[in-house]
Structures are given as C-alpha cells and as structure tokens.
Picture 1 (cartoon, rainbow, N blue to C red):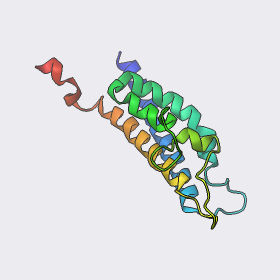
Picture 2 (picture 1 turned 90 degrees about the vertical axis):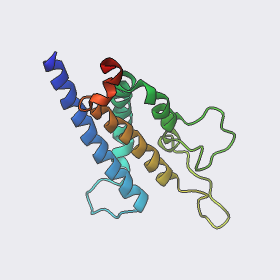
Picture 3 (picture 1 turned 135 degrees about the vertical axis):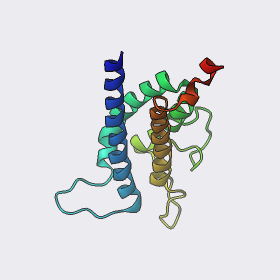
Length: 146
C-alpha cells in the first residue's frame, strides 16, 4: 500500500510541477512577454498541455476531493445557462476553442480573456494543490477520530 501511495505522491508532484510550468506560460501570454527568437510563443505550452493536465487533475480531484469537483469542472466548462459571454461567464474551454472577448469600436476587448483564463486555471491549480494536503493533514479524517 505504501508503494502505491508513494507512487501517487510522486505523480501528484509531477502534475503540480506541470501546473506551475503551464501557469507561467499563460502568465507570459497574459502580460504580453516578448520571447527570444527560437523560443516558443507564450501560451503555446498551455494550449498543448492543458487537456492532458486537466484529464489527470480531474481524476485526482474526483477521487481525493470530490466536494471540489463541480467547481473544478465549472472553471473549465463554464455555465450551460449563460446567455452572454463576459468576464464572469467566460471559461477556460472558451479560450482553448479560440473564443475571445468581443472588440469594441476602438478595437479594445470588452474584457481580458487571457487574464480570465489565467485566473480560472490558477484556481484549478490551487484546488489540485489542496489535494496534496489530503496526505499530510489529519484534518481530512476528523470524522474517523470522532
């Protein structure tokens, strides 16, 4: 059992490091960071790696923190009841599908779609990171103690 737990912790740490890499990449896109010639375009790592990350992270959350699963999913899918696209209703899936904020007459976006994606992904990363505490904190097992 300790072998499986050890492997799970190693895999969770690997997933957490991938989260940091993807988050930094998305931050570069959000801030408009210029890249050196030959470096990948900011945002590319997020576009290429997010689906794999989401699939693994989703399973961790489903099994370890099921009470947070709906929130985790909503950050990706958004609400199926939305009537308009704005900073509140925008979802990670929108950005991955190339759906962005509308542009006004001056050519400015109505909201920062990359920033909205960043904040939603950052929240997903924090939910995943809280799953690591499941193995370190006895507070998750209070019911068994009482």
